[in-house]
Image (cartoon, rainbow, N blue to C red):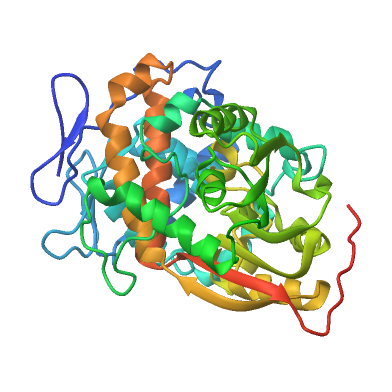
Length: 451
């Protein structure tokens, strides 16, 4: 169960909880910083929507394996012993946000402190495992009439992509350093066991697991001495450093000025300035010819409207006999079709313009619109759940440092929700992560692609 200590932070009981305290938002939330959190939806429409949302939510959770506790003592759910607990502090506010914004309101209500959980990931995992059936089917057919759609201003066109990327990756290099491992890798690690449960590898092996992920991609792309490597999406430079250490010449592109600055610094400190070039450039503007192309968890930021352009660009710059290795978060194809045009909490607060592809979508796009083909795949979603657990715990242990960087408690609850929301997706199987190897079909000549 959850309890509140003298400092206003939520802590978990020893059984089933988490090893950190969760900060509570201030009594008065700054509307200039958090307009969607400071003000509750109001008016007749909001009243009606709140009543409907409260009814749907209560009906949905009555048979779920968790406890939902209300201030009046009501407890909903069909919870076995040790099931996760969701405690709703302000039912009216929760219902208003949920009725107004659906899943956006669900996340915003957590940011506002309307509800808490003894183990946020466990609670969200229950919902994630049933994402397609929580809302009754007749109401699902009406969802498109009421739920918001991605704004055109956030589509990943040449004009918008830089802004979308900046809103996340340019928050602060110091912020990301609070929870990433020493390699500054912001993608799933590959732990020693890739079959079954990963167990608890501990933090001492975290950097090694990130190197294992990178090295496998470089191996599959055939990167070695003299390789001309294109990296789409620099991150903070670890893959470029590993490739340069193999003797490759690396051209890496990013749209994050913060990432470019730190990645260039790391490259210079390692003595690879002559081997690695990092440019602030859209992938569509890349020219030249490369023996290998590697891209780690970049396709999620492309947008489904541009997946063909993404792979056509890779094909255009790939030298004869070259190989491609990408790492991609994936989703089931039916869920992609149901959600690809929607506007969610993650879009609003974390990744504007993002869409997670399905394996089928990748295979269809490459088969139908390029001369590339998928040769090999490795799925390791349970490793992403473990990666996110380590990020979550590191982030929460360094709350004071995060506050000193200027990120308030509403932000900290937002970021915790993002990490736990993501972890729940992988732990439940709703999301997966794949390393995918591609090359040209033997009958396909190299061809260009319009930008």
